[in-house]
Amino acid sequence: MTPEALAALPEQERALYTNVPVWATAAFAIAVWGSTLACVLLLIRKKLATPVFVIAFIAILIQMVHSLFISNSIAVYGPGGMVMPVMIIVIGLYMILFSRQATSKDWLH
Image (tube, rainbow, N blue to C red; front, side):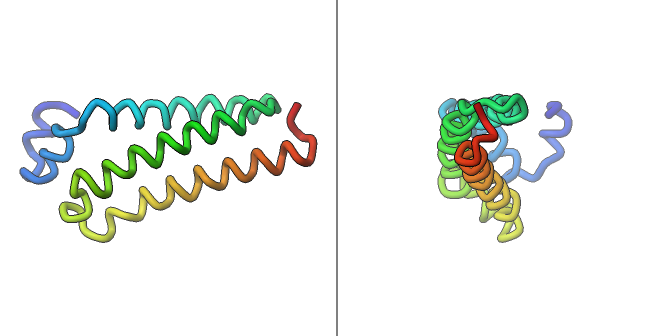
Protein backbone atom coordinates (compact mmCIF):
# COMPACT_ATOMS: atom_id res chain seq x y z
CA MET A 1 0.00 0.00 0.00
CA THR A 2 1.38 3.38 -0.94
CA PRO A 3 1.93 5.99 1.76
CA GLU A 4 -0.77 8.15 0.16
CA ALA A 5 -3.33 5.33 0.23
CA LEU A 6 -2.38 4.52 3.81
CA ALA A 7 -2.79 8.17 4.83
CA ALA A 8 -6.26 8.21 3.24
CA LEU A 9 -7.51 5.42 5.53
CA PRO A 10 -9.35 6.18 8.76
CA GLU A 11 -7.10 6.13 11.83
CA GLN A 12 -8.34 2.74 13.09
CA GLU A 13 -7.76 1.01 9.73
CA ARG A 14 -4.34 2.64 9.40
CA ALA A 15 -3.43 1.22 12.81
CA LEU A 16 -4.40 -2.28 11.62
CA TYR A 17 -2.00 -2.01 8.69
CA THR A 18 0.92 -0.45 10.55
CA ASN A 19 0.86 -2.43 13.81
CA VAL A 20 1.33 -5.97 12.51
CA PRO A 21 3.94 -7.91 14.52
CA VAL A 22 6.68 -9.87 12.77
CA TRP A 23 5.27 -13.23 13.87
CA ALA A 24 1.90 -12.47 12.24
CA THR A 25 3.61 -11.42 9.01
CA ALA A 26 5.72 -14.59 9.10
CA ALA A 27 2.61 -16.73 9.68
CA PHE A 28 0.91 -14.99 6.73
CA ALA A 29 3.93 -15.68 4.49
CA ILE A 30 4.09 -19.34 5.53
CA ALA A 31 0.34 -19.71 4.97
CA VAL A 32 0.47 -18.18 1.48
CA TRP A 33 3.63 -19.83 0.19
CA GLY A 34 2.91 -23.13 1.95
CA SER A 35 -0.56 -23.30 0.43
CA THR A 36 0.83 -22.43 -2.99
CA LEU A 37 3.49 -25.14 -2.72
CA ALA A 38 0.93 -27.67 -1.50
CA CYS A 39 -1.37 -26.89 -4.46
CA VAL A 40 1.52 -27.39 -6.87
CA LEU A 41 2.35 -30.69 -5.14
CA LEU A 42 -1.28 -31.69 -5.45
CA LEU A 43 -1.25 -30.85 -9.16
CA ILE A 44 1.81 -33.02 -9.73
CA ARG A 45 0.18 -35.75 -7.62
CA LYS A 46 2.62 -35.94 -4.70
CA LYS A 47 1.64 -37.22 -1.25
CA LEU A 48 3.79 -34.50 0.28
CA ALA A 49 0.90 -32.10 -0.43
CA THR A 50 -0.98 -33.21 2.69
CA PRO A 51 1.66 -32.38 5.32
CA VAL A 52 2.44 -29.11 3.54
CA PHE A 53 -1.27 -28.23 3.63
CA VAL A 54 -1.31 -29.02 7.37
CA ILE A 55 1.68 -26.74 8.03
CA ALA A 56 0.10 -23.97 5.95
CA PHE A 57 -3.19 -24.43 7.82
CA ILE A 58 -1.47 -24.06 11.19
CA ALA A 59 0.07 -20.83 9.89
CA ILE A 60 -3.39 -19.70 8.73
CA LEU A 61 -4.77 -20.27 12.23
CA ILE A 62 -1.89 -18.37 13.84
CA GLN A 63 -2.36 -15.46 11.49
CA MET A 64 -6.12 -15.44 12.05
CA VAL A 65 -5.65 -15.36 15.83
CA HIS A 66 -3.81 -12.09 15.35
CA SER A 67 -6.26 -10.72 12.79
CA LEU A 68 -9.45 -11.58 14.65
CA PHE A 69 -8.54 -11.45 18.33
CA ILE A 70 -5.38 -9.46 18.93
CA SER A 71 -5.63 -6.66 16.37
CA ASN A 72 -9.29 -5.92 17.12
CA SER A 73 -10.20 -5.93 13.42
CA ILE A 74 -13.80 -6.96 14.14
CA ALA A 75 -14.34 -3.68 15.98
CA VAL A 76 -12.93 -1.78 13.00
CA TYR A 77 -14.60 -3.66 10.14
CA GLY A 78 -17.69 -4.95 11.94
CA PRO A 79 -19.17 -8.46 11.66
CA GLY A 80 -18.74 -8.42 7.87
CA GLY A 81 -15.00 -8.51 8.48
CA MET A 82 -15.39 -12.14 9.58
CA VAL A 83 -16.48 -13.42 6.16
CA MET A 84 -13.08 -13.65 4.46
CA PRO A 85 -11.18 -15.11 7.44
CA VAL A 86 -13.84 -17.81 7.91
CA MET A 87 -13.74 -18.61 4.18
CA ILE A 88 -9.94 -18.95 4.29
CA ILE A 89 -10.13 -21.32 7.26
CA VAL A 90 -12.87 -23.43 5.62
CA ILE A 91 -10.98 -23.65 2.30
CA GLY A 92 -7.73 -24.53 4.09
CA LEU A 93 -9.45 -27.31 6.02
CA TYR A 94 -11.13 -28.56 2.85
CA MET A 95 -7.76 -28.76 1.06
CA ILE A 96 -6.36 -30.91 3.87
CA LEU A 97 -9.36 -33.24 3.72
CA PHE A 98 -9.24 -33.39 -0.07
CA SER A 99 -5.54 -34.24 -0.15
CA ARG A 100 -6.06 -36.96 2.48
CA GLN A 101 -8.90 -38.40 0.42
CA ALA A 102 -6.75 -38.26 -2.73
CA THR A 103 -4.00 -40.14 -0.88
CA SER A 104 -6.42 -42.80 0.36
CA LYS A 105 -7.80 -43.27 -3.17
CA ASP A 106 -4.21 -43.66 -4.40
CA TRP A 107 -4.42 -40.59 -6.66
CA LEU A 108 -1.20 -39.25 -5.16
CA HIS A 109 2.16 -40.99 -5.26
